[in-house]
Length: 465
Image (tube, rainbow, N blue to C red; front, side, top):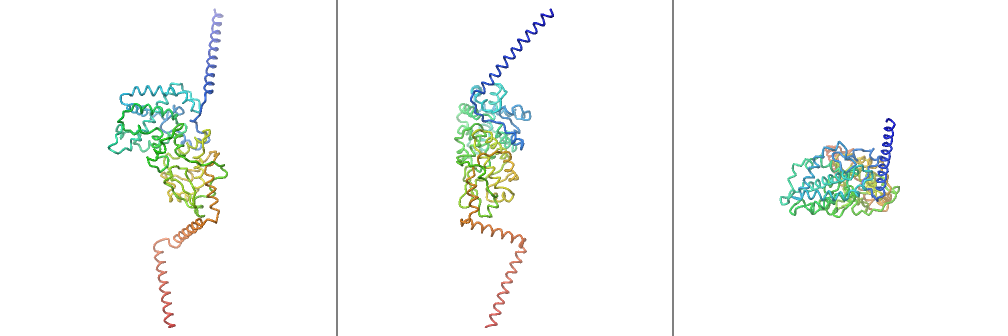
């Protein structure tokens, strides 16, 4: 009897082992079949060498978007607000809320494989869990953008969806910059085509009279308007809408990247041929001026004409650093991506090396620092760990560097004379006229000297005549 039981157990063990082996083979085949499908990775993990330099710049603070940070317990506080935003978004479709939800869920389910292929890391969630994450986070982002777009509508003739004055997210001075930080993280993204799909369905079921001018905009426009205050650009809402109306991309960070680039046509040249040889104050001493170009639409539209470097203004806000860092990380990880934003950071690092350089550009309206940041260190740290393959301002740097060494430009000589005169006046004021009384004393002495000279002249003249 004992022998028979042992044989049966052994037979069961062999069968179970064979079953586990078959299941393992099936898992391996499924994994390999996934790899055989063409995937264009667009949502990456930040390179560890960049993350180690400043962890906070690449990690979400209050909200997780997408699967990478979904299980983070520190980000669960806003989950209730996500549910409420989802409910409000469905209410925008009047009585068709349930129909809208079903259609959105079916649409995202059909995009699940395509969306999964956008992530560079293996996603362990099954099909339905991933669809739930994409749907849930997509609804939250769209409702957030719509509410933010409606929050500045002060015209009584403009109808908004509901009174959002009590919204703890939109009306919190700390929350909006934090969400700008979180939604621009490379690791905190969902595919942009998911947002566009959901938006098109919501718009289809939205009642005609519903203001939320979102019915006249696209997702890219709503996104850039939401991020506008953190982008550091002095652009009107109308110009932002015009620039973003035809934008599309892989995710929100890619949209911001393309928004910064605009129609930039810079040609890359090897880094060793680029960067400014000296800083801004040294350029000023050799006759090169700096001028703010507020009419420029693109941050990268920098040019050099007649001894003047013309640059669009940059305003450093709370989320500006994290946006720049994640844009650079996106450029570092994305195959075939440009190095435009990294090139801008390297250019500014070479131009701003001291507080005097910052003061010069602030005086000329090129830099506005709203956070009292150490601006030279701001750009220096941003460039640490970055591998720059193509420097997109090499031609500009060559032109400026060559001009600074040339003695053939009369404008440069005139600028040098003006700068020297200004320096001498500062020295004179600092060393000889530190206060108003010294100036009055000097003027009195000069007047006395003039009167004495005149008296001597007339006395001598009367003597000889």
